[in-house]
Length: 257
Image 1 (cartoon, one colour):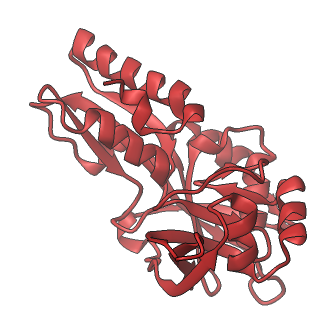
Image 2 (tube, helix red, strand yellow):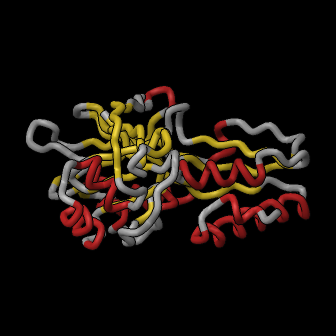
Image 3 (cartoon, one colour):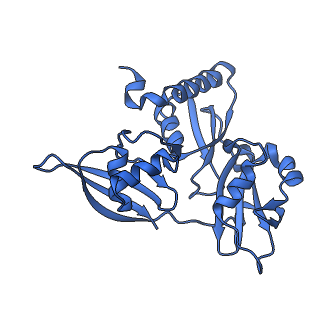
């Protein structure tokens, strides 16, 4: 039985990468630290490597509720500490009385520095407090080059994980009946848009599935998939409840609060 059949065809390259890391750790008997992975990538990594007797997979992203995390693949004898993940937590100082900073502005400014998304963890916002996590190896580059977010001048302060913002993941459940599990059909029901307008969002690259851009309206969703649509928030397929007598799908989904 092929391991690939348990995942989507487009995930084959990622699986091959993870399997290569596993062999690297076995051959050199030394830990392998990854960049930040999204939850889907972490799930795949744990599924294909997590039960190996010779290798352990540990993840850390600043705290227990982190969405994006670095993974450490290591021989079974090795037990890592938080410092082994080489993550820096920054708080952004900015003129709070005059401007507000949004998640998209922080991420946009970080990406404008020419660095990969994989070098950054979560962006955390709680009222006026704005934080983000980054790979320790780009710390000096960030402090030297990140001077503005939006139109606001900012400065960075490296802080302890003890002071990290705690973000609670909460989903408001909803029951749907849809004609198919295609992305455009489910997105239409989730956002209460017409199917044509949902398809337009997809065509305009405003929709992601499992943190990756989704540009195919016919993409078939599965239980556990996370869909985000710009301007409409984030949704999760919590469970597929089977078909009705009219051959429609009963779906339990969640909208992130």
